[in-house]
Image (cartoon, rainbow, N blue to C red; front, side, top):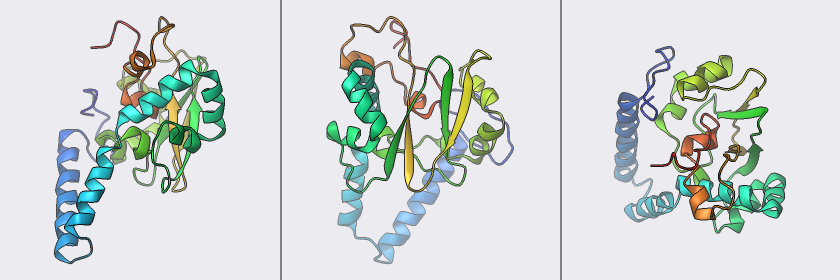
Length: 212
């Protein structure tokens, strides 16, 4: 996987730079075909690009930071993730439902879409290539601990690993365990502790002092 420098084997197809290139080629060909056939206009396509530009992992990181630091927001987010995202100014009108999964010292949630690559792009940005690839989708269901270890996430044996499969109606945002030493940090500082992949559950939050 190009995002963390490890390989998940070859079963079910590849991933990494080659997989990313293949997705880009397919996307470009489809876009040009749709424009040529008049299915979409250049204006509509540009509007979609502008909309996508607002979908970044920083949105999810802000939700995580607010979740960590505001107990009232935490309760609202657990009750209605979509409404909690809207509280932070995210446009959620046409987005699917959003469920918040809170990791704890004894429970690790890991998100996958076994059928395709559904993810909460409105809070996490476009899904990474490894998440879209068939290798991850197949292996994480059968061997979640092995996959996590390849991301550098080694969990104690008494930690339950729960794999959650995304549906067309529901997306999931994983809240990683707040790292020790982050007490008293501002929301902006807390956001820097939230890697994108932690919001899929395959990584942990970064400890203060370990950020670039």
